[in-house]
Length: 369
Ligand SMILES: [Zn+2]
Ligand SMILES: [Zn+2]
Image (cartoon, rainbow, N blue to C red; front, side, top):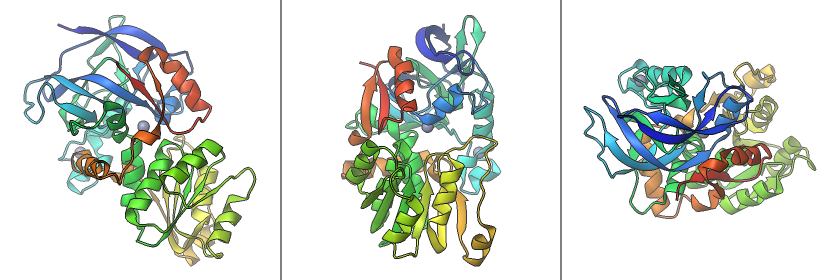
């Protein structure tokens, strides 16, 4: 028997969101039904709303969620009803060439499911107006219930609040993971361009790695303040200072060891590249539009032996990395609560995305009472 529930639906690109009643089927083989308790509002959903991410519509939004397992399908023995879990939007298969080579974030099966708007089975369990509809990145967490692959489900400690746990599913894993898997060494200098939900977590990750100097560029005063709270040693307002000159000035004209772009803007990616020292590494973390191209000085690329690399989902393997993030949280080295700046109900999701578009600092979370 299908269950009725409310979900946030994008009916068509650039059209108003609908919070409507849909039906969700029970979980199929290797699938799990999760009652959502919190779901973060991420810029990737906003890119889908605007049509920058060409995902199939109508679409149930949301991919940064935490909740309680309510039902498991056949062939599921890793989690049980009542388990508290966070969801991964890359349900990696474990057997494709990327998974076996240690890059599960590039899993073919998971990425195909995301593009098709389905679960890894190739199906979706949600129906709207009697027609199957897509889910965002094999999850669809902006809904009362979500059926996901068991490969998307990671248990969390009983003591972790759901709103904080939800952020582990995208922003924290993406930002902290990018820093932890970058070449930052203890004592290094780091630049982070953009202090939104992901950028703040790069700052946290850089601090955990032992970076001595963490320079953050962001035009929002509130974001700069948050960045300082999370460990930035200097912040730069690009509206009043040339950020490249400011970074060079703060590093004795050398440049930083590692630079991160956390917005998805190609000019800011060039800034991150230009801000790193000879032999340094720039990491692209923010997600640009599919056809964006970046212009870099090719001579510097060669003669200064710079590295430019991408980081997708923090190069994370959630089954391995979420327990580690939970351990860092339980010892106070990873902070989640201050990331949450606003809470909304599911009915208020459209307003949450409007506030996101206004670039209000920190993370917004939809919570179920
Ligand atoms: Zn996200
Ligand atoms: Zn795979």
